[in-house]
Length: 392
Image 1 (cartoon, rainbow, N blue to C red):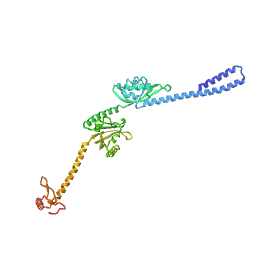
Image 2: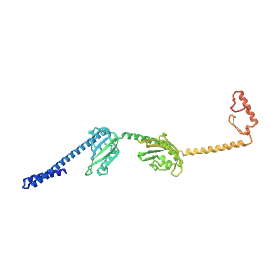
Image 3: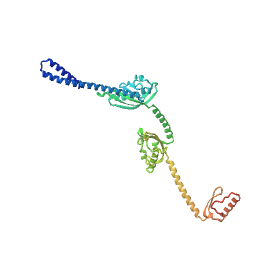
Image 4: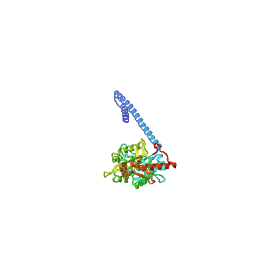
């Protein structure tokens, strides 16, 4: 716009000059000069404003680029700008140090050259999606190769930079975080879990693993077989197992679960009945422990084992019934012995009296025998009068 006005002012000035050389009246010449001078002045002012705006935009772009480069240089995680051909246009010291290269060395390579052969494909697919317009942002885990050839796990997150007018991709900016220590820790945990899973399965114990990052609970083959299900049939919903518990046991189990989640108990432990797939009830001993919580204290990971204790519970119930029956029988026998008219005396292997019915206790012969035994004990000093007891 400013350029148009400047051109208009210039044309007006030229026209005024030409008219001054032509045979025109003074009034016309004066009018042309009156028009051309303000137009030229306005055009010059607008041109100056336009130039100032261009210079200010350039200054802001330069400052923005400087901030980006400063942030890139000072970042604790790797940052790389990668072209459509996979060449690394620019990177920061953190990424170069992560792979053991200098900044100049790594910028002379392509991401294909520093990527583990087994993970190259995911990078190619990202590039293809970027070119096709289906990928604008990405995040995934992959292995890079250090300068000495050793692999290192990293998490990539980035976005595609496109031309504002055409929308065609120009390059991509990636943030690369070193997660090798975490991956090695996960591998050690997985190996340990495999060992104790095998040990528990050999002992007939099922294993459950609650991991909220993976979407719920998984159960071992032994666990689901315990309840008549197929492997994987119960995986997923972390609350499904609660619905399978006997209604009379749910409150006790829920309380034990709350106590552990609130940190009141070091372990979760409960005995309860769960419904088998065919409808009957199976007694279960469940033991578990929280392994990981998030920053707000919410459960992230927990693991535990289940043992089928149905046979033990049936044995316990049988023992309780047998004890009750024995107690009833003993009571009936006592009443019978107390009520018969003959004297009944029971002794142990040392001939000590363990039981006498009322008839036997009142027998003269027995009273005489007891007095004789007492005199003998007193003469030898082995008898002590019991409190509350008089002489017989």
